[in-house]
Every structure is written in C-alpha cells, then in structure tokens.
Image 1 (spheres, rainbow, N blue to C red):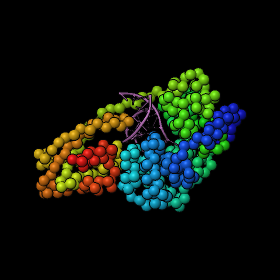
Image 2: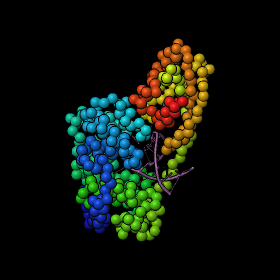
Image 3: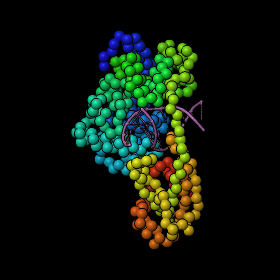
Image 4: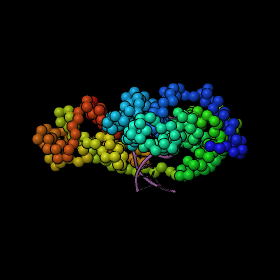
Amino acid sequence: MERDNKSSEFLHIGNKLLSWYGKNARDLPFRQTKDPYKIWICEIVFQQTRISQGLNHYNNFIKRFPDVKTLADAEENEVLLYWKGLGYYSRAINIHKASQQIMNDYQGVFPADYEEILKLKGVGKYTAAAVSSICFGGRMPAVDGNFYRVLSRIFADDFDISNSKAFSYFSQLAAMVMPDNVGDFNQAMMDLGSEICKPKNPLCSECPVNDDCLAFSMQKISEYPVKTKKVKTEDLALKYYFVHRNGQFLIRQRKDDFIWKKLFEFPPVISVELEPFIRNVKTINHKLTHKNLIIEISSVEVHSEAVWNSFIAENQYLITDFEAFHDKSFPKPLENYIQNSLKD
DNA sequence: AAGGCGGGGGG
DNA sequence: CCCCCAGCCTT
C-alpha cells in the first residue's frame, strides 16, 4: 500500500504504539507463535469475545485440535463441544468447514495471501488482515472495535461506527498511522484498546499517544466513538420438557438456523400420555444480546417403559444421562438446568 | 444496507 | 439496566 505525503504526517503515532507494544504487550498464549493455524483459531475465538472469557476455550481447543488436519478430521459435534458456552456457534461450524477447505483447496497448507485467507468460511476482512499481517507480513490493518475507538478518539472523529461504511472509513484512518510492522501494529492497537483506551474510564494519563490524541486534548474522550444505532432486545418464550426415567433423559439436536446452531436441547413438546407426570415447572430468564429468553422447563418423570419407548420412537429423541451429557454441547441455560437437576 | 447471532463482565 | 467485546453471514 502506497503512502502519500499527507499520511506520513501521522506516522509517528503508529511508531509510538509499536514502541509501547514492545514493552507492554500482554503475555498471551498465541503471542508465542506465528503458526497461522493458531493465530486463525485465536482470531475466531476472540471475535466479539473478551480475552478473559475465551482463554480456556482457546487453550483447550488447540490442545485437542493442534493443526488443520486434526480439526478437519474431527466430527462437527466434537468441534461444537469445544465451543460449548462460548456463544456465536456458527463460528465453530465455520472453522470446521474452513479446515476442510484448507485440506481440499490448499493441500493442507494454510494460505498466505490475504485474498485467499478471506475465502475461508467464517473469515472476514478483519480476520484475514490479522492472520496475514501477523503470520505472513501482510500489510492490511485489522480494523475491529478497538480501531474504531482508538482512531475516533485520536482524530476526534465523529464518523458513526454503526454505519456500514465504518470499516472502510477507519481502514483509511488506520493507513495514515500504520508503520511498516503491520502485524505488531495491529496487535498494539488491540492491546491499547483493551488496556488503556478502554470504552469507559480510559487510562489516558498512561497512554503512549495522549499527546497526539485530539479528543483527550479537548477533554472530550467520552464523546468518542460515536454510535447511533441502539441495541433493542425483545422477549422470547421457550418451552421445554425435561423427560427423564431412571437417571436418563431425552434430547435432540437443533438445526443450524436461528439461535444455538446445532446445539442439543430438550423436547419442546410432550404427548398427552405424559402430561400427568409433570412434576415441577421451572422458569429461567436468560439474557442474549438481542433477546431476553424466558425458558419454561417442565420436569416429567416417566415410569412406564412402554410410554417412554414409544415417545422416543415417535419423535426420534436421543437418550443421554447425567454422565454422558458432557459429551454434547448444550446452550448455557440448559447446561445449568442439567447441573442443578443433578444435585437433586 | 440492515439485522441476527451468545455469553460474560463493567459501570 | 445498558453497553461492549480480536466480527461474520444472510437477506
């Protein structure tokens, strides 16, 4: 990418960030490697996810699936199991498909080119830029929420980050401050955004570029970034039946549409023969980003083996128990429900 | 171009 | 209670 005279005016900002990063980089497991597979996995795991939340998932995932081939050879359900509780489950489905893409289309060798990385399932412009810059010396800024926040403050820029053009807009701002070492620059921006230039109560007095920050000099840090779109949440009622007998209970796998893609759940309906055996009803409130779930779970104890068997056969439910359910990925609230039932 | 997708944590 | 987090896919 060619740099013109105008943009070099801000190059010292990027260099200060690099210098700061050299001394203050967070010690994270994926910082010890340039293996594109591991960097790719870490980028996917940490999409819309704080480092502290995803760290165990990342470590467990890499331990079980240390390379592309191991992941490609695995069952999708096992990949989902390692994603349990992390959310945005299409990410797990997509990295599994992408690993097979790499085996089939790239002979198992991770593609080095930005445009090729971008073709992988679940990889967008951010992730392609991050992997190509960190592992292969690519020169694209990895523009994410941190970039929006840091750059909008440095330039006191009120461009609306909820605008669909925000990515390309802030990519241009990034290009103005971006030094030659793009990989480290991208990671420096992430660490600065996470540790210093935080959404609320940023530590401006410790910021390596506070001299260059227009919003800081105007005492208007809290006004940036500008985001107009508001999150609206609506209520959604879900009904489940915890149908159990002799320590076993019934489950089925969800489709890959709507929420909780391909995770396991309880039967959503029961037959009239089972209605008399409803023991208790529990209501669980569970907050998602766009939905407030009200989950009603009725516990149904089945005594008749014949009724049990016919109910399973008619609906093709799967049988599991309080040991084996650990092998399957359940949504968080259902996971918690099972754990609580185990105590009783 | 807009909306949907999890779950956790901070203020 | 609201906002945000190493974004991406579908419509």
